[in-house]
Amino acid sequence: MLLSLKSFETYADGMFRIMEGITDNAVKTEMEKNVNQMISVFNTSVQNGGRLVGLSKQNFTPEAIKELSAIWKSSGMVIPEIKINARCLRIPSGFQVRGIPVDIIEADSAERRQELAIDFTPKGIISNVAIAMEMHRYDEIMATQESDIDYARRQIIINFVDNFRTAYNRKDINLLNSVFSDKALIITGKVLKEKPNSDITRLTLNNNNVVYIKQTKQEYLKKLEGVFKATKFVNVKFEDIEVVKHPKYDDIYGVTLKQYWHTNNYQDEGYLFLMIDFHDADFPLIQFRTWQPYKNDQGEIITSEDNVFHFGSFKTFFYHR
View 1: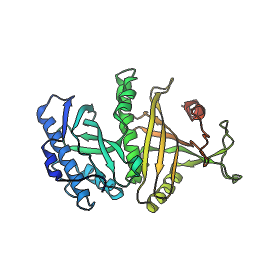
View 2: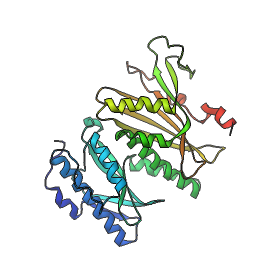
View 3: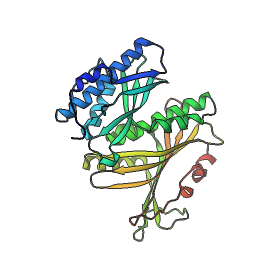
View 4: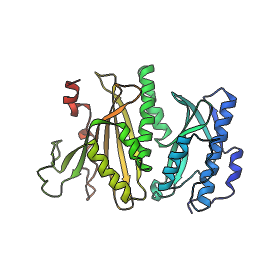
């Protein structure tokens, strides 16, 4: 067992508290009650053998219940036995708290401790739970905002990235299908071990040891669906996340991060670049997704930060805008 689990029913008395960011005491109390109930549900479910039981529409929206149930099919989660003091954030759909520590049961011990972001309706009901970037990284990204619109878009991007990552953890092909443009270009790097076949598109990025394979959205999702079916648990972690607005087009943002992908039979580490288009502000879409391997099998760095894809790698796209 990951933790020493005792009578978690008592945690509903106040393990989680909101210390700032909301003045409506009734909604604040409802949010605290619902998160404490979620903690109790998580921990007692693990304690009793792993089956998730106790999700109630009094505490969660139907969508949140469905999404949590999907995550739980891959791995249970435990909230550590500590007092949690959170800051409430305003988001377009209601409220959010971040930085909730959680241990992912199926993850390797070095990757087990992660953080959650929890969204609420305006009345304080839990509407979404995502495995999230660290709170300090959230603050760093938001601190570089240039305007109110830029601030709002950065907040959307952070939530977008959190849900994008969690979609892999819960094997949610439908969500991944919805966030990619139908014309999205997906490029995946592969360490060169033999002469590439003629149908592989090779790009030059000052590194002749890596080949880059272009895929359509449909090709990428079909392959990913096969991976999901063959794998019990997919642990995806994002680190060193940076968000940059395009210098010319205000509705285009780039997200660069380091991605760790770990399953029971495969793992890798590399740089991920997402170009997100806010042309339709209500439905931002990924136009480009690229992945580049960080090291080869000998542990040698083969993609430096200077060679990571960026806006300038896709000049043709901007030329036709």
